[in-house]
Length: 386
Image (cartoon, rainbow, N blue to C red; front, side, top):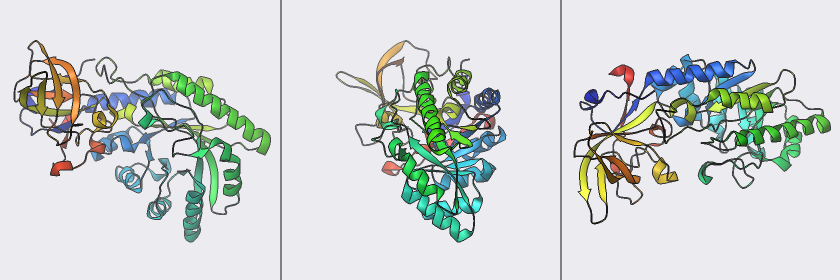
């Protein structure tokens, strides 16, 4: 299904801005919920870091999803959107006392703990409040994912989680704490994963670990959190506008060996919101160099940092030109050589004032925007507002 942009209405809006197709977001949420719902013990928590636009969070809440948060601010944003604290999980290696205290007072479902000093801080703050904090130990399974090195998280060299070999020692420490209740294990091996073999490998490691804990400690925990990581097709946002959630969830259903009554939790972000969002920008100048043609647009790396940070690919479409293709670099106005959205890309011949859509920007576009060069942050426009 090809996305139809309201281009004539775009002409009236100051660029750059983020545009969100609400219909596509709702269809994506419905499919993710329905496919997870085929397995009665699967629970989806939306990864707020992907996009915390309040209006989008409200739509996600309406779909019945919980929230996966990595800061106290994200916990607050999820609650402000109406997501029940009992559906919120809080991960991250650097939770501050203030963030932990706020989350304890809110009564969130679970902390995904990543170090002994962290769980000691949670124990102390829970004791001060006379409450018991539910925790899941984030295990670093030492599994590499087929993704960019900057967004892999499951290797022993990464900062995340408790190393596989240290798990026994950490469980001993946690089980002695009076105000901590160990309810599960948490895993997350990386992001933008399109190869199901990576998730199958994770299932194998979880199965081994569960068998070991049962054999050596007689321990079965009620919750297994497998993280997120499901990627999207940045190269074909219309052909693959909704990820294959059926394949994703069935992969876990077929390969994860669960104990009776165990619940499985997923933390999906990019796969929920990426394809519904685009960064809309105008061509400010067309610059003809000696060996390059540049489309200089009014959006910059501060509005969508992924190409500069990861050399990430985003499809770019000229919404107002039907001319023959030219060869261009699309660049922004920021005073950095890395302010480049693409190089040597075939795009219809472009003129000053043409409107371009940088596709698949719903995840880590608005959420990672920053004010470098004293630039104003772009506003967000929902399809339902036009």
